[in-house]
Length: 266
Ligand code: IPE
Ligand code: IPE
Ligand code: MG
Image 1: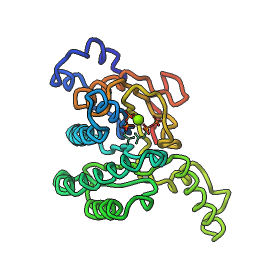
Image 2: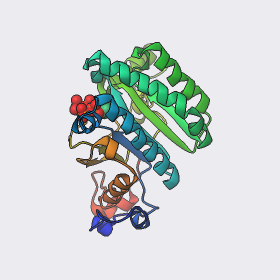
Image 3: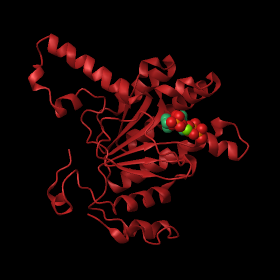
Image 4: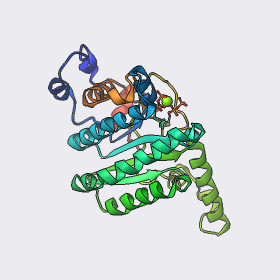
């Protein structure tokens, strides 16, 4: 799958040419994104931070459309971390309102394009009106299968693992699971991402090179792409550059280069 020439001098190319360079047989099955830099995007323009969050929604739409166009079946986006509750109420309230407006506005479009919406994280710690919209959009798109859009809300990777282990311990105590039967796939089945393949590609915008408590279990062998571009500026072209860079990576999963073609991804 390695396409070493894919990123040579691509930065200036128009979108159509970037698309033509993509190897359609070697696309990620699942892309995860840490959408960062909305606040800085707004501050650079002398705007309130919420203006950056609002603009960032356009990048979310672009990513959903691009994944749909390319046949990438899973997109998982980090919209709000557990730690983001530390921010001033004026910002967290505005973010919750924006989420609610997005869900109200986008429900029909998600249904029309066959996108299943799923939320992961401690959704019940959200204000009830935002919570109700999350559940409504989940219910109304549950039957769709062109693509799964997972949105991490009030999400923390460590709590996700703790919750999974607590449930697993309960199932052991109830005699439903024998401790000797616990293995990686079984534990993964208790995580909120159950049913999705692990992400092949993680994108983080805004120049930060950290995971910030996102998908700690699932990212074990994910390719990481860090870009200085701020999230509201991360549009289709930027995403194509990320995909082309991904196609230059040699994925070995601990094996040797010559073995990688026989490696199966889980
Ligand atoms: C990412 O943008 C969105 C959320 C975390 C909700 P930020 O709000 O973190 O933007 P910066 O990092 O301050 O620029
Ligand atoms: C990570 O961004 C969370 C989301 C993008 C939702 P942050 O801006 O909260 O991360 P840190 O604080 O810089 O690690
Ligand atoms: Mg940030």
